[in-house]
Image 1 (cartoon, rainbow over the protein chains, first blue to last red):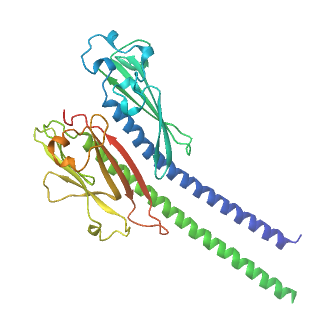
Image 2 (tube, one colour):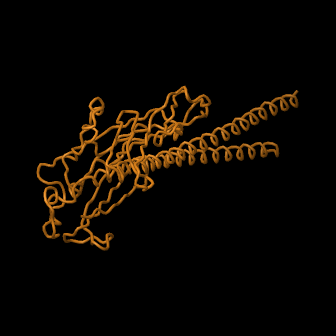
Amino acid sequence: MGNQQMLVIGGLLILSYLMLTFYNVRNDQTSFSLFTENVITGTSVGQSLIDEIQTKSFDEKTISSAVTSADSLTSVNSIGPDAGETNKSKFDDVDDYNGLKYSVSTNRIGTFSLSSQVYYVQNLNPNTKINQRSFAKRVDVSVTNPLFEDTLKFSTVISY
Amino acid sequence: MVSLLDVIGATVISAFVILILINLNAQISISAGETLLTTVVQQQATATISDIEYHVYKAGHQTSGGVIVADSTRLKFYSDYDNDGVSETLEYYLGAKSELTDVKNPSAKPLHKKLNNSADAPIIGLVDTVMFSYIDSSGAILSYSKLTAESERNKIRSIKISLSLLSAMPMEGVYPSVDWDRLISPRNLNL
C-alpha cells in the first residue's frame, strides 16, 4: 500500500471521527434542551399537585370541626383515601393523597407519572417521619417521565 | 493518461471532502443556533412563569377584593403586593398579533401584565396560546359565561394557567417553544 493511499485512509478516518464527534455533541445538546424542558414541565405538574393538596383540609377529622388533640386525627395506619373516595376529585383532606398514582399527558414531552406519599412528621422537626399522630404532615410528590432517567421530587409540610 | 486520471480522481475526491466539510460547518452553525434559541426560549419561559407564579399566588393578599375579570385570555385581580395597606389591581391578558411588528413568528402574540390602571402594560412573554381556567372548591371548572357575575367569581379557589411560549426568531424554519400548565391556588383568594 502506497503512502498516498495511507494518507487518504488517514484523512478519511480523521474526517469520520470529526463527524461522529459533532453528531455526538449535537445529540447531547438536544438531550440537554429536552431535559431542561422536562424539568420545567415536570415541575409545573408536580407543583400543581402540591398546590391542589394544600387547598384540602388538614385531616378528615378537621373538615367540619376543630381538633385540639393529635390523638383525634386519622390514625397512622388509616392514612389514605377514605371510604367512597375512589378518585382524586373526591379527596377532601391532605392524607387522602397518600399512595396516589396517576398520569398527566402533555403535548410536547409525553406523559408524566405522578405519585404522592403523605405521612406524619415531628411538629418541630418536619424531616423526621413518625409512626404516631401529630399536627404536621409531610407530602412527597415524585414526577417521572419514561423519556428521562431522573425523577423530580417535591416536598412540602402542611401543619394544622 | 494514468496520471491524468489520478489527477481527475483526486480532484473529485477532494471536492467531495471540501463539500462535506462545508456541510459539516453549516450543520455546526445551525446546531449552535438551535441550541441558543431553545435556551433563550426556556430562559424567557422561566422568567414569565416565575412572574405569573409569584403574582397570581398572592391574589387576594391583604385585600377584601378577589378576581375582578375571569376570562379565558384575561385575568384581573386585587392584591396588596407592596404591603402598604392599599390594594393594587394586576391584570394578565393576551394582546393582538398586530402589536408585534418586529417579531417574525406568525403565531406569536404578546402576553401583557398591567398594574393598576397604568397606561403601560409591558409584554412579559410571547405566546401562541394562553388559557386561564377557574376552579371552585369542589374542583369543578367554572363556566366563563357565568364568571361575569361577582357571586360566581367569588367561588374561584384555584386558577389553572396554560401557556405555550414561543421564540420570536426561527431557526431553519422552526420556532422553538415551551408548554407550561400550572394550577395555582392562591391562599388568600375569597377567604
